[in-house]
Length: 203
Image: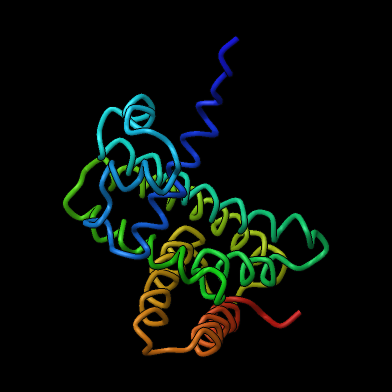
């Protein structure tokens, strides 16, 4: 009997090949032929999984976004006893891809962000990923604010949007060598410390 093909596993393998090629050559260097070779599948297999290169890129971007979001959530699950403020710091650090082992993923993510400026499907996919992260950040900011007295109004959604923008900016500055990973993490920590000092009374 012919071997049953796990299409989801194949799609994920193809997405991983896209990431490897994008990290090496940028998205302009990603071709269906090279992806097939890197994923060790035939061109026909790639075309059966994805009707076009754009569809393949959209799937890959969604795959990356899910990985980043799940890592951020996993940090919260691993340390359920930590404060919401501490949990938020860990989650944002994961989303910013600041650690050395995530720099390849960060390069690919930013390549997709740049391409999304001229691709509506990629832009829509990015919005979904950012919305998931913003939801998690908003919840943690609200919990942290409710856990102490406030000295000034706190808008959790606005602060979450600010954190997302800061995370992306720090990612860029680390990748071009303007900041080290540690310097970026220190800036992020300083921002979060300032947020609680502005809005929350000492416990």
